[in-house]
Image 1: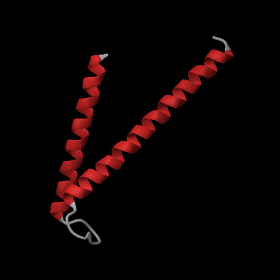
Image 2: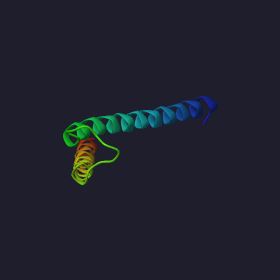
Image 3: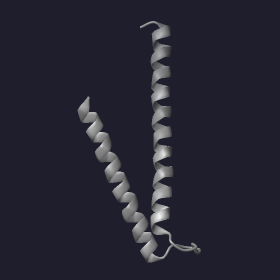
Length: 78
């Protein structure tokens, strides 16, 4: 493999990694917004109540489960 192909492959790998990082950051931001709006109904104190904590945990888990299900579905289509 010549150096131009190697550089192209390295660049593509770097771009793929950056795309994955951007997607992860976007997912975390969406997850935070959705679950915060759903679970934190009052003014937050210095720590979450047990109900808020439980709600945030359940919300995050459902969101991640659904995201993984969607990813697997798209992968099976290819």
